Amino acid sequence: MEFIAGKYNYWIYVALMMIGFYAMIAKGNLIKKIIGMNVFQTAVFLFYISIAKVREGTAPILWDRTVLYDNPVPHVLILTAIVVSVSTTAVALALIILIYREFGTMEEDEILRIQKNGSAVPPGKPE
Amino acid sequence: MIKEHAPVLVILVPLLSAVLVPLVGMLRNRFCWHVAFAATHVSFLLSGLLLFRVQTNGKISYRLGGWEPPWGIEYVIDELNSFVLVTIAFIGFLATLYARKSVVAEIEPVRIPAFYSIFLLFLAGLLGIVITGDIFNLYVFLEISSLAGYALIAASRKREALLASYNYLILGTIAATFILIGIGYLYMVTGSLNMADLRERLPALYHSKVVLTAFAFFSVGISLKLALFPLHVWLPNAYTYAPSVVSAVMAATATKVGAYVLFRIMFTVFRVEFDLEVVSITSILLVLSSAAIILGSVLAIAQTNIKRMLAYSSVGQIGYIVLGASIVNETAMTGSLVHILNHALMKGTLFFIAGCVLYRTGIEDIAGLRGMGRRMPFSMAAFTVAGLSMAGVPLTVGFVSKWYLALGALRADLWYLVPVILVSSLLTAVYFGRIIESIYFGRAEDGHSSGSLSRERMHEAPTGMLVPALLLAVLCLVFGISASTTVGYAEAAARLLLGGR
Image 1 (cartoon, each protein chain N blue to C red):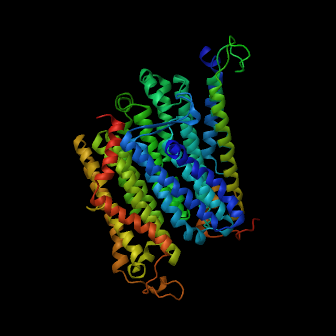
Image 2 (cartoon, chains in turn cyan, green; image 1 turned 180 degrees about the horizontal axis):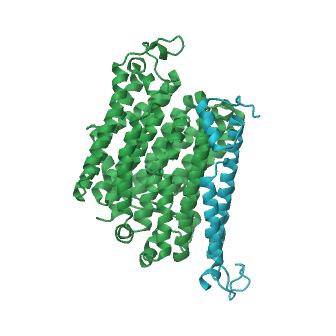
Image 3 (cartoon, helix red, strand yellow; image 1 turned 90 degrees about the horizontal axis):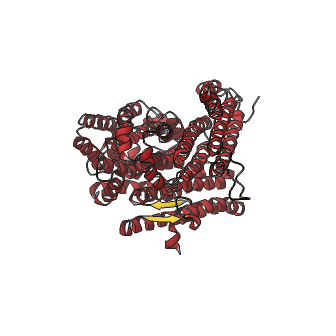
């Protein structure tokens, strides 16, 4: 019981990571893949925040040097990783817009079929 | 001043120019190229300076903002990364030279300033990965170069490029996030992000499950990034549909940087003893890279598109680079490291020429190359040299790296790797031999002639595109005939990595 309850944040991290990872790989819809990617990355943020926690620690603001505080380094690292995640999402969404304009769909198998069989939608004119 | 701050300037010059380029683009579209050219030129000269300083004075440590490592970010330049740095900066410089004409033909005019800006970001990211001594900084640079890479592929006018770029983005993000998780686990147990510091702290923890998990995440993430078989699925489409100059740069540098990161993690952050005794990563890599070498060549034979064939052959060549590291002795490691440069020279030439052919004739299929030897004699000469080099013909660079790899395999009593190398060389000879034969002895069919131009008339690629390709082809021969310089650098780097094994 202690093994599960005492480290519940890590279990949440693992569960979220698997859900996100599954969506990234198994889903055929390009937007759903991006949602999966965001869940996957958020799970990693939770993991970093979890490892920063010190038992009985407070926010790392140095009012008084005797107070026990959390490790601020993972927080800083994950701020960078959040920026990276936002940029990745932005690039991915931009690509999806271009794909939608070109093929008129966001389903991967349909796009592959259109690529193989020639244009279903005239370029530049989505339905 | 410049000498003192050279390690950071190598990165800063392209990074800041990436901001400058769109501003210049607002004034005059065509000046963008000049800025990009100047930036990559300066970066190349500085990396050359660093290589020279490392060879004469040994390791350079640069503290960003004056913070002491392991707290601050440290740039470390040693025998290994100065060599990789020069390779990348050199290819980046030549590619910018090549881009001037090629980009005008392949990218819409309004997008050209943005293209050069992203191109510089991509190079800055790659150079940053190589130069940094801080493992989290490595992740940040990795993402800078990857994000720029996705955009560069999507810049192509071909619509297939969009989905190729998207799939690369998904797999690239999985890879980068795995690396991030690995960094998190290492930080969790050591409290350090500095590579040299991690090397000191980790041996006591080698049997900790956290460290083993971290290593697993690192190895899968990096293998995905460097397109090691069977994680290579993103590579062929990305290289086939990207603009010519982007394919050339990516094939010549991006996967090499992936290989460099693998070596750094395996042999600098972790030690050789860990790779051999605690986890048997080297035997796993041995099998995977042998499979990559054979299957990459087999798949390349089956292709009809020039760039797709080159992409599959890249998968095989990445196998060679990883193979040398998984044999774990100095000779094989030398072969592997020298192949980083050699493959960059060969693949750079081949993709440059594929771009020249596309520029002049619009031909993308191997069948279209029939009789091309009369029409584009210089381009085809360069293609032939690089093709023979890929097959490992003596007096070319391909032979040098294969020789060291085979020698290393024999010294490690892994004799069964020698047939792998030989069979793959034969297969490579088959697919390049076939093309070279049709270039010089094939008769052009009328169906392939484009427009009113007769295919028998000589019609070379523009000088700006031809010169970088010819230069690389000449270097393929120069470093093949007198390999002592490049092998010398690679040997020093291999000694550094393996510590006299």
